[in-house]
Figure: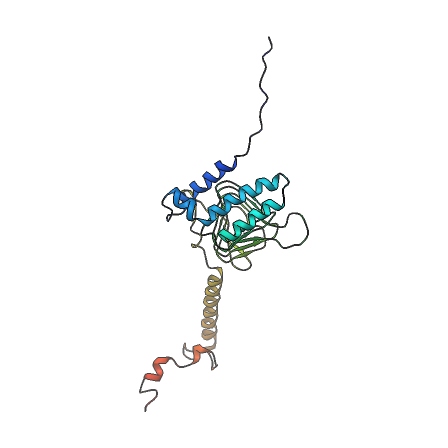
Length: 258
């Protein structure tokens, strides 16, 4: 007899209930304020918004339009989180605090992503087609950040709070500023999730410090060439605040005798 083999089945995507259970479980891992599952289910608007979205997205994928949009509208009214039912969201997605988050229709989000309140995944075009960002797995987006356009944020990247990202972000990078700039090309996360999105460099402060240091070097070199003393090489008279008398000088009787 010829041996028969069963046909291989394509992997099936998890159903609504397994996805939502994992969404709840990941909150307990990433939020120290979460004490138990009942608390997460009942008073975490981000979890409720994602649960409603997963149901609306299932209907949207089956060709429904008004009903999923109505579910999205109702979830927005209840949770203050606006997720278009067309957005594709991976597993273990966590919206911390969940206030003011907006996720557009063609946005795509990978697994194990964390976003904070005020985040916008928005579009930059009125033309149909892909117009919203794609976030890789393990991405952390800080509070108030705006990621705009059909760009890709690579796996494990961090977007600092209040940044505006309009260009693609490499995997593992840290983005800061308006517009967003990569300030840390890559980093290691040996202990799991890296939620320290506040521990970021200050590129503007560093640039100013380097410029001031360079100016000081040039002034010393100029003073040495001109044969001036340190006092003679000081700034000339101007109306800048640094040239004005300090508060202590007004209270010193030797400077302003009565």
